[in-house]
Length: 199
Length: 199
Image 1: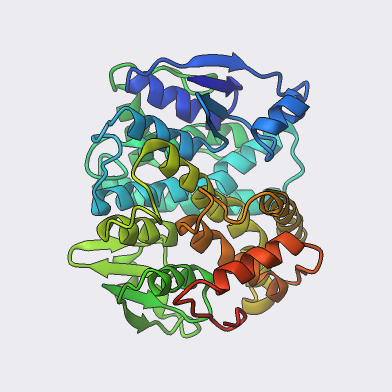
Image 2: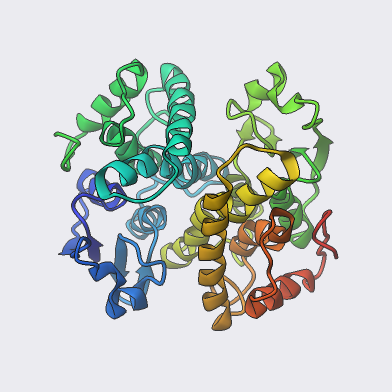
């Protein structure tokens, strides 16, 4: 299982994080993002969206972090991390959508501006960040985990860019429940950090 | 199965569309969106995100269109629409993420500005729209369906806001493969339209 990877990418970290927690071996292939390698002919053939991560296993190629989490959980039949019954799978799915929507366009986008110089509309990314952080804080005041009262791929998909929010100028100081949830994830066996998310 | 619904919402239409194609009965409950009913105490208790659709079945409550599609497909064991094996489920998941991310913040966001007066940054929504439409056009030039060479919930999740793009000032005239794909979906048995997406 190959992960075309950028160490500083929260989307790549979602996959590395889940692999570490679920004890899945990945062959990590660093991609020279700052040098534009993700837009090379070879990488665009794997992922026309021109983004990282990209995942390859036999003839399966995936271009989306959430889809890679689903693949790893289903391939290894990790029901605890992604149940196959309708109600529980859908509960997890809600948070995969939140990762792709509100978190991507909130704290992730804010960080893209500050850390990588993306020309996005910062007031929008800040407003999006504040909205989703408030919703997460409220949810986590009454729940230890995002879905199913236990760690799932939902936590792996949502946590990275929330924890990295300060790198986009979004403070987490006023969100005690979010901070406790991040600490809870860090305390899971196998957890490994990334730059900006200390172990 | 109750769907708290807004007829003009593409996210609600995703669910109505899949239910129509898969012959699933829904109890449609119209919500007075323009009157703010989705922010009422009752609706916020069902969905703290304050959005539509909301879905309720026995003790299952879901707040995200993609998650509702997953629930309906898994509950009715519609393997053709959402396979349970790792590779095929992950292929579908990629496009559920695309619906939540690029389509939501492209054509959907553009339409929210033009049709409902949302104060979003229009140049961003237009740029996002053009990017995802080009990627979809390229994909659909070589594929009849988004995933698995057949209709899946991926098509139900992505098509509505693509088809509604002109309502956000985004023309589809230059995207022949996208138009053929929309026509292909409209030709499926059971298809039903919505305002802006003629049958």
